[in-house]
Image 1 (cartoon, each protein chain N blue to C red):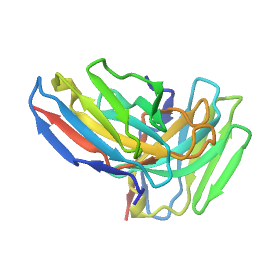
Image 2 (cartoon, one colour; image 1 turned 60 degrees about the vertical axis):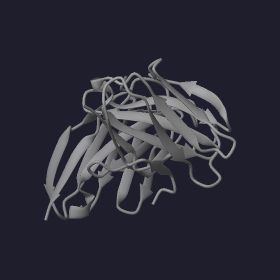
Image 3 (spheres, rainbow over the protein chains, first blue to last red; image 1 turned 45 degrees about the horizontal axis):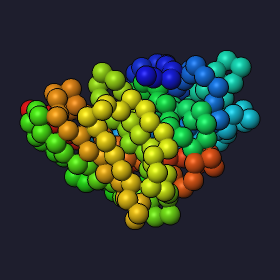
Amino acid sequence: SQQGEEDPQALSIQEGENATMNCSYKTSINNLQWYRQNSGRGLVHLILIRSNEREKHSGRLRVTLDTSKKSSSLLITASRAADTASYFCATDEASGSRLTFGEGTQLTVNP
Amino acid sequence: DSGVTQTPKHLITATGQRVTLRCSPRSGDLSVYWYQQSLDQGLQFLIQYYNGEERAKGNILERFSAQQFPDLHSELNLSSLELGDSALYFCASSPNPGDGQPQHFGDGTRLSIL
């Protein structure tokens, strides 16, 4: 079963704009991870944020985590056409065990 | 390239048949995870092995089984296949459970049941 929900399900923006995706989850977590999946391909790990962290940056990515609200957001700044993909959040409840994935956000960046 | 290798990339077979999916983890990773991705169920965790031993089990059907060998590669066996088993099957690996490290995914095996 899915841990949580992602919002929006689909997002279409122009190159250069920022994209924000949100994820909510239901249980206590050890960490939360964001992955990207290009159509029909494997998942690529983007960033991991631990439960005691509130914000993390990696290049054009910014992730926030609010454990009191059981939610996270992924911000991609200055988007590029190559960012077009599905983005999934995944929660790790027990550190190194199974990942529970959200339903994903389909991001389309128009050139 | 994640370093995780899955074979075959595509598999087409018929209902009632049995198939084996293979996964080689990243060098040095001891833990292997199997996931199923389908349109109706999304990404679902199936099973995890660590250093040859089963560590966690998810929504894995009794018709499915897996193992991890001494060289750390893993196989997922699917038997008595049904149309609903058509999906993308991913293998992922990580170093040691408990470190909170990300999982690295292979490109998957696309299984089509006719």
